[in-house]
Length: 443
Image (tube, rainbow, N blue to C red):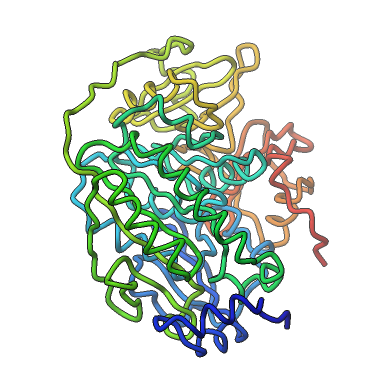
Protein backbone atom coordinates (compact mmCIF):
# COMPACT_ATOMS: atom_id res chain seq x y z
CA UNK A 1 0.00 0.00 0.00
CA UNK A 2 1.28 3.49 -0.91
CA UNK A 3 2.09 5.36 2.34
CA UNK A 4 0.25 8.53 3.32
CA UNK A 5 2.04 11.84 2.78
CA UNK A 6 3.71 12.82 6.08
CA UNK A 7 2.06 16.26 6.14
CA UNK A 8 -1.36 14.65 5.62
CA UNK A 9 -0.80 12.27 8.53
CA UNK A 10 0.29 15.19 10.72
CA UNK A 11 -2.77 17.24 9.70
CA UNK A 12 -5.12 14.37 10.59
CA UNK A 13 -3.53 13.62 13.95
CA UNK A 14 -3.49 17.31 14.92
CA UNK A 15 -7.13 17.83 13.93
CA UNK A 16 -9.52 17.23 16.84
CA UNK A 17 -12.33 16.64 14.33
CA UNK A 18 -10.50 13.67 12.80
CA UNK A 19 -8.52 10.84 14.42
CA UNK A 20 -6.29 7.91 13.54
CA UNK A 21 -9.30 5.69 12.80
CA UNK A 22 -9.50 7.62 9.53
CA UNK A 23 -6.01 6.46 8.58
CA UNK A 24 -6.95 2.86 9.38
CA UNK A 25 -10.13 3.13 7.31
CA UNK A 26 -8.30 4.61 4.31
CA UNK A 27 -6.13 1.47 4.22
CA UNK A 28 -9.15 -0.88 4.30
CA UNK A 29 -11.38 -2.20 1.48
CA UNK A 30 -13.72 0.33 -0.11
CA UNK A 31 -17.50 -0.28 -0.19
CA UNK A 32 -19.21 -0.76 -3.57
CA UNK A 33 -22.45 1.05 -4.33
CA UNK A 34 -24.83 1.79 -7.19
CA UNK A 35 -27.89 3.95 -7.76
CA UNK A 36 -30.82 2.53 -9.73
CA UNK A 37 -32.62 4.32 -12.54
CA UNK A 38 -36.26 4.28 -11.46
CA UNK A 39 -37.44 4.49 -15.10
CA UNK A 40 -35.63 1.39 -16.28
CA UNK A 41 -35.22 -2.35 -15.67
CA UNK A 42 -33.90 -3.41 -12.27
CA UNK A 43 -30.55 -5.25 -12.69
CA UNK A 44 -29.81 -8.74 -11.42
CA UNK A 45 -27.09 -7.64 -9.00
CA UNK A 46 -26.53 -8.80 -5.43
CA UNK A 47 -27.68 -5.72 -3.53
CA UNK A 48 -26.94 -6.23 0.15
CA UNK A 49 -28.15 -3.06 1.85
CA UNK A 50 -30.10 0.10 1.05
CA UNK A 51 -28.36 3.47 1.27
CA UNK A 52 -30.74 5.34 3.54
CA UNK A 53 -29.83 8.89 2.47
CA UNK A 54 -30.62 8.26 -1.21
CA UNK A 55 -33.68 6.92 -2.98
CA UNK A 56 -32.61 3.99 -5.15
CA UNK A 57 -29.09 3.76 -3.66
CA UNK A 58 -27.73 0.32 -2.73
CA UNK A 59 -24.52 -1.35 -1.60
CA UNK A 60 -23.26 -4.42 -3.45
CA UNK A 61 -21.71 -7.48 -1.84
CA UNK A 62 -19.00 -7.62 -4.48
CA UNK A 63 -17.89 -5.63 -7.51
CA UNK A 64 -19.20 -7.12 -10.78
CA UNK A 65 -17.60 -6.48 -14.16
CA UNK A 66 -19.99 -3.67 -15.09
CA UNK A 67 -18.76 -3.67 -18.70
CA UNK A 68 -20.18 -7.17 -19.17
CA UNK A 69 -23.68 -6.21 -18.03
CA UNK A 70 -25.86 -4.90 -20.90
CA UNK A 71 -28.17 -3.20 -18.38
CA UNK A 72 -25.25 -1.02 -17.28
CA UNK A 73 -24.85 0.18 -20.87
CA UNK A 74 -28.62 0.73 -21.09
CA UNK A 75 -28.49 3.19 -18.18
CA UNK A 76 -30.43 1.03 -15.72
CA UNK A 77 -28.04 1.93 -12.90
CA UNK A 78 -24.99 4.06 -12.17
CA UNK A 79 -22.01 2.97 -10.02
CA UNK A 80 -21.60 5.89 -7.61
CA UNK A 81 -19.77 6.46 -4.36
CA UNK A 82 -22.29 6.22 -1.52
CA UNK A 83 -21.31 9.39 0.35
CA UNK A 84 -21.86 11.63 -2.66
CA UNK A 85 -25.40 10.25 -2.99
CA UNK A 86 -26.35 12.39 0.03
CA UNK A 87 -27.01 15.10 -2.57
CA UNK A 88 -30.35 13.32 -3.10
CA UNK A 89 -31.33 13.95 0.54
CA UNK A 90 -29.95 17.50 0.59
CA UNK A 91 -31.66 18.75 -2.55
CA UNK A 92 -35.03 17.40 -1.43
CA UNK A 93 -34.85 19.62 1.69
CA UNK A 94 -34.59 22.86 -0.31
CA UNK A 95 -37.47 25.22 -1.01
CA UNK A 96 -37.47 25.16 -4.81
CA UNK A 97 -39.96 26.17 -7.51
CA UNK A 98 -41.95 23.38 -9.15
CA UNK A 99 -39.76 23.47 -12.26
CA UNK A 100 -36.30 24.44 -10.98
CA UNK A 101 -33.34 25.32 -13.17
CA UNK A 102 -30.22 23.56 -11.88
CA UNK A 103 -26.60 23.89 -12.97
CA UNK A 104 -24.19 21.06 -12.17
CA UNK A 105 -21.01 23.02 -12.75
CA UNK A 106 -18.25 20.38 -12.49
CA UNK A 107 -20.35 17.44 -13.56
CA UNK A 108 -18.23 14.71 -15.19
CA UNK A 109 -18.46 11.79 -15.19
CA UNK A 110 -22.14 12.25 -14.32
CA UNK A 111 -23.00 10.69 -10.95
CA UNK A 112 -24.52 13.82 -9.45
CA UNK A 113 -26.10 14.88 -12.75
CA UNK A 114 -27.94 11.59 -13.19
CA UNK A 115 -29.06 11.87 -9.55
CA UNK A 116 -30.41 15.38 -10.19
CA UNK A 117 -32.12 14.18 -13.38
CA UNK A 118 -33.90 11.56 -11.27
CA UNK A 119 -34.92 14.23 -8.76
CA UNK A 120 -36.31 16.54 -11.46
CA UNK A 121 -38.32 13.73 -13.08
CA UNK A 122 -38.50 15.64 -16.39
CA UNK A 123 -39.52 18.90 -14.67
CA UNK A 124 -37.51 22.10 -15.03
CA UNK A 125 -34.03 22.04 -16.52
CA UNK A 126 -30.64 20.51 -15.74
CA UNK A 127 -27.53 22.04 -17.28
CA UNK A 128 -24.60 19.67 -16.76
CA UNK A 129 -21.23 21.26 -17.48
CA UNK A 130 -17.66 20.03 -17.67
CA UNK A 131 -14.56 22.04 -18.51
CA UNK A 132 -12.39 19.23 -19.94
CA UNK A 133 -13.64 18.21 -23.39
CA UNK A 134 -12.92 14.47 -23.14
CA UNK A 135 -14.63 14.31 -19.77
CA UNK A 136 -17.55 16.33 -21.15
CA UNK A 137 -18.07 13.65 -23.81
CA UNK A 138 -18.24 11.00 -21.07
CA UNK A 139 -20.75 13.19 -19.23
CA UNK A 140 -22.88 13.43 -22.36
CA UNK A 141 -22.76 9.65 -22.84
CA UNK A 142 -23.81 8.92 -19.25
CA UNK A 143 -26.69 11.40 -19.28
CA UNK A 144 -27.86 10.06 -22.64
CA UNK A 145 -27.90 6.54 -21.24
CA UNK A 146 -29.81 7.74 -18.19
CA UNK A 147 -32.59 8.84 -20.54
CA UNK A 148 -33.58 12.30 -19.26
CA UNK A 149 -35.32 14.73 -21.63
CA UNK A 150 -34.81 18.08 -19.88
CA UNK A 151 -31.01 18.12 -19.97
CA UNK A 152 -28.40 20.29 -21.65
CA UNK A 153 -24.72 19.27 -21.58
CA UNK A 154 -22.14 22.04 -21.96
CA UNK A 155 -18.35 22.20 -22.20
CA UNK A 156 -17.42 25.55 -20.66
CA UNK A 157 -15.34 27.40 -18.09
CA UNK A 158 -17.24 28.51 -14.96
CA UNK A 159 -16.77 32.15 -15.96
CA UNK A 160 -18.67 31.54 -19.23
CA UNK A 161 -21.91 31.30 -17.24
CA UNK A 162 -21.73 34.98 -16.30
CA UNK A 163 -23.83 35.64 -19.40
CA UNK A 164 -26.77 34.01 -17.58
CA UNK A 165 -27.19 36.32 -14.55
CA UNK A 166 -29.58 35.11 -11.82
CA UNK A 167 -30.75 32.27 -14.07
CA UNK A 168 -30.34 29.16 -11.89
CA UNK A 169 -32.31 28.22 -8.79
CA UNK A 170 -29.50 25.87 -7.73
CA UNK A 171 -25.82 25.70 -8.64
CA UNK A 172 -24.07 22.49 -7.63
CA UNK A 173 -20.31 22.97 -7.39
CA UNK A 174 -18.44 19.75 -6.68
CA UNK A 175 -15.19 21.64 -6.91
CA UNK A 176 -11.73 20.22 -7.75
CA UNK A 177 -9.95 19.48 -4.50
CA UNK A 178 -6.96 17.78 -2.90
CA UNK A 179 -8.89 14.50 -2.84
CA UNK A 180 -8.04 13.26 0.65
CA UNK A 181 -11.32 11.37 0.90
CA UNK A 182 -10.39 9.24 -2.13
CA UNK A 183 -7.05 7.91 -0.80
CA UNK A 184 -8.65 4.47 -0.35
CA UNK A 185 -10.42 4.27 -3.70
CA UNK A 186 -7.45 5.72 -5.60
CA UNK A 187 -4.21 5.05 -3.68
CA UNK A 188 -2.15 6.69 -6.45
CA UNK A 189 -3.73 10.02 -5.51
CA UNK A 190 -1.66 9.95 -2.33
CA UNK A 191 1.41 10.69 -4.43
CA UNK A 192 -0.26 13.82 -5.84
CA UNK A 193 -1.14 15.35 -2.46
CA UNK A 194 0.94 18.15 -0.97
CA UNK A 195 0.34 21.05 1.38
CA UNK A 196 1.15 23.40 -1.49
CA UNK A 197 -1.41 21.76 -3.74
CA UNK A 198 -3.99 21.99 -0.96
CA UNK A 199 -3.45 25.76 -0.70
CA UNK A 200 -3.72 26.09 -4.48
CA UNK A 201 -7.01 24.18 -4.40
CA UNK A 202 -8.45 26.66 -1.89
CA UNK A 203 -7.72 29.59 -4.21
CA UNK A 204 -9.06 27.74 -7.22
CA UNK A 205 -12.27 26.83 -5.40
CA UNK A 206 -12.84 30.45 -4.40
CA UNK A 207 -12.26 31.57 -7.99
CA UNK A 208 -14.81 29.06 -9.30
CA UNK A 209 -17.47 30.18 -6.82
CA UNK A 210 -16.77 33.83 -7.59
CA UNK A 211 -17.23 33.11 -11.30
CA UNK A 212 -20.67 31.54 -10.93
CA UNK A 213 -22.18 33.37 -7.95
CA UNK A 214 -24.09 35.87 -10.06
CA UNK A 215 -25.78 33.06 -12.01
CA UNK A 216 -27.76 32.10 -8.87
CA UNK A 217 -31.21 33.66 -8.59
CA UNK A 218 -32.25 35.63 -5.47
CA UNK A 219 -33.19 33.12 -2.74
CA UNK A 220 -31.42 30.45 -4.83
CA UNK A 221 -28.89 27.97 -3.49
CA UNK A 222 -25.26 26.99 -3.91
CA UNK A 223 -24.54 23.36 -3.02
CA UNK A 224 -20.80 23.15 -2.39
CA UNK A 225 -19.03 19.81 -2.10
CA UNK A 226 -15.58 18.23 -2.14
CA UNK A 227 -14.09 14.76 -1.72
CA UNK A 228 -11.57 16.05 0.80
CA UNK A 229 -11.55 16.29 4.61
CA UNK A 230 -9.56 19.35 5.66
CA UNK A 231 -11.02 22.52 7.12
CA UNK A 232 -9.40 24.94 4.67
CA UNK A 233 -11.11 23.56 1.57
CA UNK A 234 -14.40 22.96 3.36
CA UNK A 235 -15.65 24.92 6.40
CA UNK A 236 -13.31 27.89 5.91
CA UNK A 237 -14.34 28.18 2.27
CA UNK A 238 -18.01 28.12 3.29
CA UNK A 239 -17.35 30.94 5.77
CA UNK A 240 -15.47 32.85 3.05
CA UNK A 241 -18.40 32.51 0.63
CA UNK A 242 -20.93 33.62 3.25
CA UNK A 243 -18.83 36.66 4.11
CA UNK A 244 -17.72 37.58 0.60
CA UNK A 245 -21.23 37.48 -0.86
CA UNK A 246 -23.28 38.32 2.23
CA UNK A 247 -24.99 34.95 1.99
CA UNK A 248 -26.66 32.63 4.49
CA UNK A 249 -25.32 29.20 5.51
CA UNK A 250 -28.17 26.70 5.47
CA UNK A 251 -27.95 24.02 8.16
CA UNK A 252 -29.40 20.68 7.05
CA UNK A 253 -29.27 17.75 9.43
CA UNK A 254 -28.38 14.49 7.73
CA UNK A 255 -29.28 11.45 9.76
CA UNK A 256 -27.53 8.09 9.78
CA UNK A 257 -23.73 8.12 10.11
CA UNK A 258 -22.94 11.53 8.61
CA UNK A 259 -21.16 13.98 10.91
CA UNK A 260 -21.85 17.68 11.26
CA UNK A 261 -18.82 19.63 10.12
CA UNK A 262 -16.56 21.73 12.28
CA UNK A 263 -18.56 24.44 14.09
CA UNK A 264 -21.73 22.84 12.73
CA UNK A 265 -20.96 23.78 9.11
CA UNK A 266 -21.92 21.26 6.45
CA UNK A 267 -21.98 17.47 6.64
CA UNK A 268 -19.26 14.85 6.29
CA UNK A 269 -19.06 11.25 5.23
CA UNK A 270 -15.90 10.02 6.97
CA UNK A 271 -14.39 6.61 6.09
CA UNK A 272 -14.49 4.44 9.19
CA UNK A 273 -17.60 6.23 10.46
CA UNK A 274 -19.71 6.35 7.28
CA UNK A 275 -19.82 3.43 4.86
CA UNK A 276 -18.38 5.49 2.01
CA UNK A 277 -15.38 7.40 0.80
CA UNK A 278 -14.70 10.85 2.24
CA UNK A 279 -17.14 13.57 1.22
CA UNK A 280 -18.13 17.06 2.41
CA UNK A 281 -21.28 18.95 1.42
CA UNK A 282 -22.75 22.28 2.50
CA UNK A 283 -25.55 24.59 1.34
CA UNK A 284 -25.50 28.38 1.05
CA UNK A 285 -28.54 30.49 0.25
CA UNK A 286 -28.26 33.67 -1.76
CA UNK A 287 -30.10 36.42 0.07
CA UNK A 288 -32.84 38.18 -1.89
CA UNK A 289 -31.85 41.27 -3.83
CA UNK A 290 -33.28 43.25 -6.69
CA UNK A 291 -34.26 40.83 -9.40
CA UNK A 292 -32.32 41.23 -12.62
CA UNK A 293 -34.58 40.41 -15.53
CA UNK A 294 -32.87 38.20 -18.04
CA UNK A 295 -33.69 39.34 -21.54
CA UNK A 296 -35.78 36.74 -23.31
CA UNK A 297 -34.30 35.59 -26.57
CA UNK A 298 -35.19 32.89 -29.03
CA UNK A 299 -32.97 30.43 -30.82
CA UNK A 300 -33.45 31.12 -34.51
CA UNK A 301 -31.31 28.34 -35.98
CA UNK A 302 -33.98 25.66 -35.72
CA UNK A 303 -37.13 24.92 -37.66
CA UNK A 304 -40.28 24.14 -35.71
CA UNK A 305 -41.76 20.82 -36.81
CA UNK A 306 -45.54 20.94 -36.86
CA UNK A 307 -46.24 18.00 -39.14
CA UNK A 308 -45.51 14.94 -37.02
CA UNK A 309 -46.13 12.38 -39.77
CA UNK A 310 -42.43 11.67 -40.29
CA UNK A 311 -41.63 11.07 -36.61
CA UNK A 312 -44.90 9.57 -35.39
CA UNK A 313 -43.67 6.03 -36.03
CA UNK A 314 -40.42 6.67 -34.11
CA UNK A 315 -41.43 8.35 -30.87
CA UNK A 316 -44.20 9.59 -28.62
CA UNK A 317 -45.16 13.19 -29.28
CA UNK A 318 -47.32 14.15 -26.27
CA UNK A 319 -46.09 17.18 -24.27
CA UNK A 320 -43.05 17.56 -26.53
CA UNK A 321 -41.76 20.18 -28.94
CA UNK A 322 -39.87 19.06 -32.04
CA UNK A 323 -37.38 21.06 -34.08
CA UNK A 324 -35.01 20.47 -36.92
CA UNK A 325 -31.52 21.82 -36.28
CA UNK A 326 -29.11 21.29 -39.18
CA UNK A 327 -29.52 17.58 -40.03
CA UNK A 328 -31.03 16.54 -36.71
CA UNK A 329 -34.52 16.32 -35.20
CA UNK A 330 -34.48 17.45 -31.56
CA UNK A 331 -37.16 17.07 -28.92
CA UNK A 332 -37.73 19.10 -25.74
CA UNK A 333 -40.38 18.87 -23.03
CA UNK A 334 -42.83 21.74 -23.48
CA UNK A 335 -42.09 23.08 -20.00
CA UNK A 336 -38.35 23.40 -20.62
CA UNK A 337 -38.48 24.90 -24.10
CA UNK A 338 -38.00 28.57 -23.12
CA UNK A 339 -35.11 27.75 -20.80
CA UNK A 340 -33.34 25.56 -23.35
CA UNK A 341 -33.85 28.28 -25.95
CA UNK A 342 -32.18 30.71 -23.55
CA UNK A 343 -29.18 28.42 -23.19
CA UNK A 344 -28.85 27.86 -26.93
CA UNK A 345 -29.08 31.60 -27.55
CA UNK A 346 -26.07 32.17 -25.29
CA UNK A 347 -22.46 31.70 -26.32
CA UNK A 348 -22.10 28.50 -24.33
CA UNK A 349 -20.62 25.48 -26.11
CA UNK A 350 -23.47 22.95 -26.10
CA UNK A 351 -22.81 19.23 -26.64
CA UNK A 352 -26.35 17.99 -26.03
CA UNK A 353 -29.74 19.71 -25.82
CA UNK A 354 -32.88 17.76 -25.06
CA UNK A 355 -33.08 14.50 -27.02
CA UNK A 356 -31.85 13.91 -30.53
CA UNK A 357 -34.68 11.90 -32.06
CA UNK A 358 -33.18 11.22 -35.48
CA UNK A 359 -30.72 12.37 -38.09
CA UNK A 360 -32.01 13.47 -41.48
CA UNK A 361 -30.43 11.95 -44.58
CA UNK A 362 -32.22 13.19 -47.68
CA UNK A 363 -35.87 12.38 -47.04
CA UNK A 364 -35.04 9.54 -44.66
CA UNK A 365 -34.93 9.64 -40.84
CA UNK A 366 -32.32 7.53 -39.04
CA UNK A 367 -33.40 6.98 -35.42
CA UNK A 368 -30.80 8.05 -32.85
CA UNK A 369 -29.28 6.25 -29.87
CA UNK A 370 -30.57 9.06 -27.63
CA UNK A 371 -34.12 8.15 -28.62
CA UNK A 372 -33.55 4.45 -27.99
CA UNK A 373 -32.41 5.15 -24.42
CA UNK A 374 -35.15 7.66 -23.52
CA UNK A 375 -38.18 5.85 -22.01
CA UNK A 376 -40.30 9.02 -22.15
CA UNK A 377 -39.98 9.31 -25.93
CA UNK A 378 -39.06 6.05 -27.58
CA UNK A 379 -41.60 4.11 -29.53
CA UNK A 380 -41.05 1.14 -31.77
CA UNK A 381 -43.69 -1.07 -33.30
CA UNK A 382 -41.16 -3.87 -33.58
CA UNK A 383 -38.22 -4.83 -31.41
CA UNK A 384 -35.99 -7.87 -31.04
CA UNK A 385 -35.02 -9.47 -27.73
CA UNK A 386 -31.37 -10.54 -27.50
CA UNK A 387 -29.56 -13.08 -25.37
CA UNK A 388 -26.68 -11.99 -23.14
CA UNK A 389 -24.14 -13.19 -25.69
CA UNK A 390 -25.90 -11.39 -28.56
CA UNK A 391 -26.24 -8.21 -26.47
CA UNK A 392 -22.50 -8.10 -25.79
CA UNK A 393 -21.79 -8.73 -29.46
CA UNK A 394 -24.08 -5.84 -30.36
CA UNK A 395 -22.43 -3.55 -27.79
CA UNK A 396 -19.04 -4.42 -29.29
CA UNK A 397 -20.32 -3.19 -32.67
CA UNK A 398 -20.42 -6.67 -34.20
CA UNK A 399 -23.05 -8.28 -36.42
CA UNK A 400 -24.45 -11.78 -36.15
CA UNK A 401 -27.27 -13.90 -37.52
CA UNK A 402 -30.59 -12.19 -36.76
CA UNK A 403 -33.49 -13.20 -38.96
CA UNK A 404 -35.97 -10.42 -39.76
CA UNK A 405 -37.50 -8.33 -42.53
CA UNK A 406 -36.14 -4.97 -43.64
CA UNK A 407 -36.40 -1.91 -41.42
CA UNK A 408 -35.19 -0.25 -38.22
CA UNK A 409 -35.49 -2.31 -35.04
CA UNK A 410 -34.80 -1.71 -31.38
CA UNK A 411 -32.67 -4.40 -29.82
CA UNK A 412 -33.56 -5.25 -26.22
CA UNK A 413 -31.95 -7.13 -23.37
CA UNK A 414 -34.33 -8.22 -20.58
CA UNK A 415 -36.87 -5.91 -22.22
CA UNK A 416 -34.60 -2.85 -21.96
CA UNK A 417 -33.56 -1.17 -25.25
CA UNK A 418 -29.85 -1.09 -26.06
CA UNK A 419 -30.02 0.64 -29.46
CA UNK A 420 -30.99 0.35 -33.11
CA UNK A 421 -30.16 -1.74 -36.11
CA UNK A 422 -31.09 -1.26 -39.74
CA UNK A 423 -32.01 -4.72 -41.02
CA UNK A 424 -31.42 -5.15 -44.73
CA UNK A 425 -33.17 -8.52 -45.09
CA UNK A 426 -30.12 -10.80 -45.20
CA UNK A 427 -27.96 -8.88 -42.69
CA UNK A 428 -28.10 -5.77 -40.52
CA UNK A 429 -26.14 -2.59 -39.91
CA UNK A 430 -25.19 -2.09 -36.27
CA UNK A 431 -26.08 1.52 -35.34
CA UNK A 432 -24.61 1.48 -31.82
CA UNK A 433 -22.31 4.55 -31.47
CA UNK A 434 -18.70 3.69 -32.28
CA UNK A 435 -17.28 5.69 -29.37
CA UNK A 436 -19.40 3.74 -26.87
CA UNK A 437 -18.58 0.24 -28.03
CA UNK A 438 -17.09 -2.33 -25.66
CA UNK A 439 -13.38 -2.72 -26.33
CA UNK A 440 -12.40 -5.33 -23.77
CA UNK A 441 -11.99 -8.95 -24.83
CA UNK A 442 -15.02 -11.09 -24.02
CA UNK A 443 -14.50 -14.84 -23.64
